[in-house]
Amino acid sequence: MNIRSVKFLALVIPLFVWGSMIYPTQTEASTPGIQAETSTSLTVNSPVERVYFKDLRRYPIHRSNPVIPENLKALDGKEVSIVGYMVPFDRIENITQFILLQAPFMGCMHVPPPQANEVIMIKTERPLSSYTYDPLKITGKLTIDEVFVDGYLISVYTINSTNIQSSTASDAELDDLPANFHFYGDM
Image (cartoon, rainbow, N blue to C red):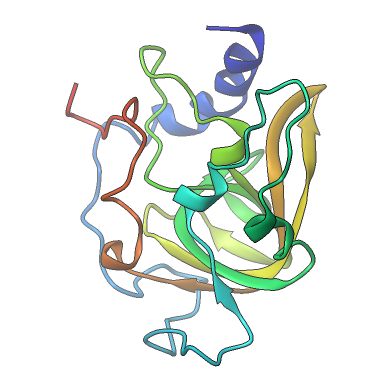
């Protein structure tokens, strides 16, 4: 484990220790302060493109001269949507920024933290009332650029959110997780 991984864990683990004892069942559109899903899916002609974590991981950030894949470069500055799970940074109420992961993150020193190409920094002007374990559908402008916190690379993606909605686990990408990912309780 490198120093960046340790620093990342130091930032997020305190927020999860209290919540990792019990993993509540997921309910559709049950998160207080987050509006219910109003549309069932995006249409082919929709101006908002759905992006997937499996595609975001294709940006080879660990190479000496990483090149952004063309399909991702085409989305830079565009309105996109993605479904994932919230990891708050500095608070669990009145949240204006958080990271979004492909699956619920249960911080554990035995599991490597997600890499910067597996994390999306979410920023919103309208604060969310509280943290949720439920999946969220995020819609907003995607920016591809390095995000540092205290000098450590956290993400290479940011979405300035225009809409955050409750979603369901069936909309999340839980079938295409990295090999090193573990759900709470499966270790």
